[in-house]
Image 1 (cartoon, one colour):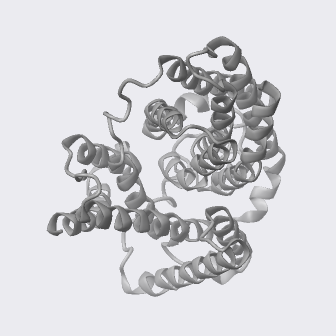
Image 2 (image 1 turned 90 degrees about the vertical axis):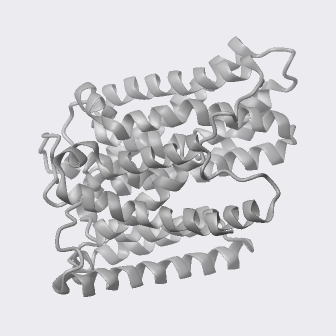
Length: 390
């Protein structure tokens, strides 16, 4: 049990160390805090330090603590990162956000349907259900994936193979975006981002984003923890509504509630001017990033169906290319494309790490909204795909 608590302590301590390095060294500022957190998490995973023998008391305790940290970190981070956003600027970018959402969903559907006819095989009965699950996971994340799998009665072995391949292919792509790939997409989509007030330089906001200096000074600490208290209140309200409406801590209801309350709060000047709330939110995102990266298991793909793997890779690549082409035609900015990709492929909790890496917090709301809509329609869209392809 001692190792369990050491790992949990490291999950919290590592972000503190990363922040201190970020404040002191230029090379860390070039790498970025989020990338550093993912690297540390992957090192934890590859060394086996965070893996326990399954079904042991240690594994069960660690799993619960790990899950709790992940479940709390992002819902606390989202309000803190939204409080000082100017929502009036985002409303100007709403048409582009909708274009990016529609383009992303159409791209996923086109990739899934074309891939189905290319890779379907008699060795995998009911391949249409695999297509349905891929539609769900790439328009809302694993929640939709699990919902579709359960509703269609998909074999658990098939579900495990699909999810394993999805993680193996999607994780490097997301790491590419966070690690600097967003600069490539800025060049491909060099369009004016209204939320950036027309400024196109890639260092936009570096003076305002992730400025950890004087974070715990007397003049800032009171306002910062006031923001944290407000975030905890919003999380409590979201959890209460989720229990009231669904009987469970439904992630969709929780995130939708806290996002709505945070946007409303951002209209109040006193809330918008709370100091260092974005930086405190990034601290929670770094915790989440270390944990997510530490979940990576290189042995998760072992003898699964090759055709399923090729199908998953096809869907991810073709959907990304089609979405990119659509955004080029609609003149969507590179940053908005990046958050759209991550929101659809992974879900809203993965948007803040990308926003932090790009240092453009103004697209945070757009990414979360796209992810939430994906949550809402992904399950229905996946089931419809299964019926159409049957």
